Structure formats: structure tokens, C-alpha cells
Image 1 (cartoon, rainbow, N blue to C red):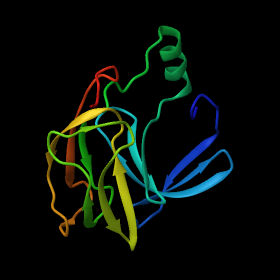
Image 2: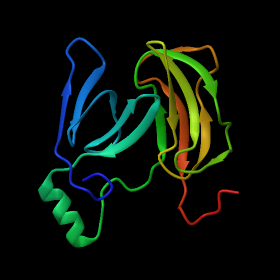
Image 3: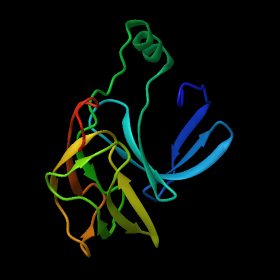
Length: 154
């Protein structure tokens, strides 16, 4: 289910690379994928965008729908580099409140800029890199503490 619409999806590693092939609803994408904390949670990066997704089987999805709960909870945590690269821009500072989708940091990898964005409303509690710094895959970039969506982001 993507935004409430069923889409047949296949996801497979591309051998010898940090990339994956995603076939979804007839569209084909090459994406960088990073497992996140929690079962079935992934950060996907493609064409300069980043999405956090939760992968659950159909049975789990149906159970969650019946009890009115979705796994995953808050959107806080450490945003990590999806692949080796160079930090080219930092768009936040510690203490800054961010809205869902707000740009956090831009990492250049394979001659492409990848803007990593906040998955949900939060407060930046740490920036772990500097502009010009080379980072390895999985390196911590920014820490965001989740806040309730009803709290003002001022």
C-alpha cells in the first residue's frame, strides 16, 4: 500500500553496489536503501529525494488496520548517510524545530546531490558532520527528536 493504494512491489539488491532495484506498480527505480531502527523500516533515496518506508506483510497490515494501529510510531532518531559521500550543505542547527519533509543535510554521492529530509515533526538535537566532510555509509549525520504533530513548530 502506498498512500492507501495497493501496488505490487519487488525489491532486490544490485550485487556489488550499495544500490537496490525497486519495481513498484510498473515503474522501475534504482535506489539507495538503508535499514532503520525497527522491523521493516527503511530509508530509500533516489533522484535527490529521501523517503522513510515501513515494509509489512499483508497479514500484519490487515491486523494493524483492524486494531487501528500502525507500527513505527515516532519519526525521531539519527539520520544516517545512505551511502559514502561528501557533505555539501547542512540546512539545520541544534535546537531548530523541523516540519515533516524539511531538508536536513545534503550529501553528494556518485556526482549526485541527495537531500536528506525529516521524516516527521521534530527538534534537531545534534548535527554530527561539517560541510566538506567525507562520510561513510551509515555515518550519523543529524539527530532529530520526534515531537507530536499537534505541538507548534514555531
